[in-house]
Length: 361
Ligand SMILES: *Cc1c(COP(=O)(O)O)cnc(C)c1O
Image (tube, rainbow, N blue to C red; front, side, top):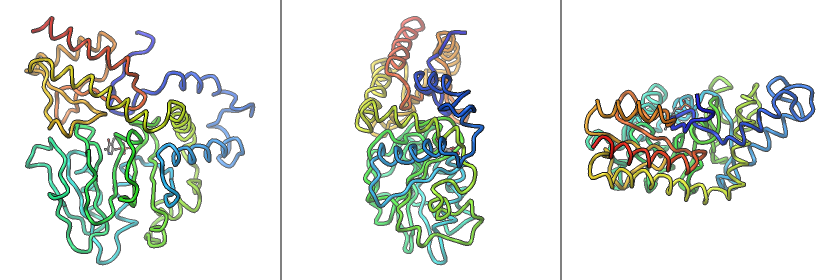
């Protein structure tokens, strides 16, 4: 086994080695408390500093304005699929959903038992190879919000322009979370599981427009209420302390690199390396998505047949380039290059792709 491989896993993701080493070094005796962080009370001062620090960093690194609050909630992005309509949809209000692929569909499936949900645009007609333009999205009367998926992790497409829908947006940003600046004015809620771009699995970060908390549903189990999580500063019950601790470290690492602007630029550069490898291959590699909607996080590509793809996956794996297999529902190959993926690793993959093409032309 090599020491560290180039890990292109779609989630959980690779994390900065320097942070893993830091965690290792301070794990057993955290801040001279004589115990690890995961053994201490979530009300302890040493933990509270970690907790509050991570919340503040989440707001500042993402550039959230003062009228937004942040919450750490367990259950990943998947629980948010249900919590959003549970909290936001009352009598006589409905919600539109953009079905842009596997995750857009998942959000619709889980929202449907909790309110009047309709599909405002369906990507089925275009094979989920692109995102909609604003003029293609149909908004019905009494729509409380439009739900969008900013990046389809499996399909490999991203929303380049946020729709002008005339209603507040709610965005699942799980797979391009904090990799791009966003126009906050358009949103009531921005959420995502943290295990793609920000840390280990175990929770989602939910940004919420504070003014809407006055009208969210109170008639729910307390854990499912946004007002409870917000009032209790994500300490309503025992939080996933280790995840929050590591997410705080990743956010600090992002800030030290220069913040969101630098991350966004790096993401575009890393993605361009792989799309160039595809586009310059004379059709040896092909991208199944529309060029304008190509994801900067999940680069999906195909080879001419499945046997060749198998060979590509076996040989890349042997070369220490792992987790390049596409999602089982679509096949092919996928390189996930989230915030912590070093550009040097992406270059190794691009070079491998050229070499493989030469050797197997
Ligand atoms: C991974 C993913 C999810 C599911 O996230 P969990 O945290 O595992 O619940 C939802 N939406 C998108 C876009 C994803 O990439």
